[in-house]
Length: 135
Length: 349
Image (cartoon, rainbow over all chains, first blue to last red; front, side):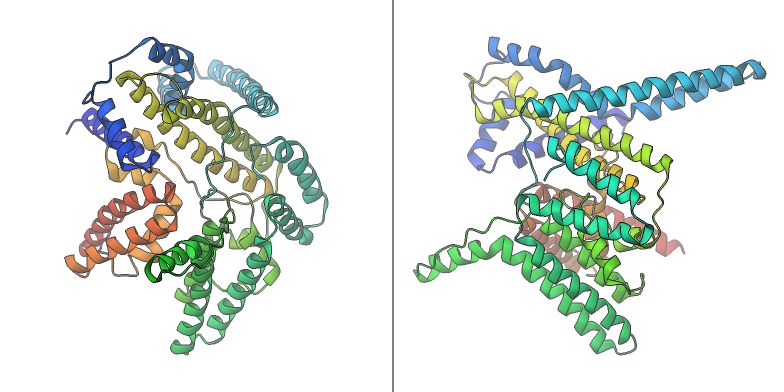
């Protein structure tokens, strides 16, 4: 089986399972699933759907990107590049040091930004549900 | 108290860390115990006495098992005593009202319901206690000789809300000798911030969208919106859950302890079994090691294997009609295929 088929089939099953998991009522599960597959009278899309999609598309894309191991992919790519350009060694060492410093400074700025943004969101009292009451 | 709150981030944690790093080594566990109690008492104080009693019980039974190492009967007695008490308390909180209402239904009596809300973390606490006592019984870990250290283990607050499940063998050395360093501190801080961002910036935002779609708090439902909705729910669950695990792992690192990883990019899986090897890893392996394999796994023929799968399913099902429920289904698949691999490698040897 080609890889892509495996990915699609797994994600598909997982999404269906999340529907079953999200609702406690069997009737609601049925309605939701049949809407997803166009089995009832639901329209394909309307102005409201587009409105919500537009408002949330960025955070959904960030979420999807965050669900793949981007860090490992970049590391692999960087390593490959290094091997290619390994001819002029002395110059490379200096470059690497510079690069590492730049990366670590950027990373620190990102961490501080995430902390500040999270704090702002918490202070703002925005939607912050606690999902683990039943454990 | 929850991690994603201003009180925790800017009052509790800084004060706790300051004291933790200032006190001499032998008092660090004490600081952890006291802060765990404050952490739990913030929401509800009533679970603390039970936690203490269970800790005494585990500790006492563990030492008894050690004492009667040669006496199989006594050893087994103390194992089952501890397992029994732990499960009894868990089931009491989870099912007291369910049982009362069933009795009312059958007999026509009218016993009032107790309406006890489930104390936060009671399940994870039980998982930890059981892993300790079973490992002591099996001889895979030495029993803890110091109640002070055991209490630190059983009350550890970072992971108690949503995992990862920390086994005694993972932290037994670090209960005595913590790896406190500037490196670990900064690694832990980074990990914690990653988790916080996952929870507050991503999970909460997509969660808000799902909340609107789920409750139908808008006009007409469409095909497009139903897909957007379920994708945002999938993202919410993943980022909330793994964010909590990241925060727990990060906090532990700051304290100089190492927890096991709990999530490994589940949504890139190529099969369902792979998904369960990547989703809430410590829960899956807990059920495999302490329930499925002791029951014989799949090595005693198909009928028994089906029975074992059903037991795991029933147990996780009853644990909570919640995220655990979903984990249960996965655990079954996971145990089934994993154990096939185990049998396979054993036959090669």
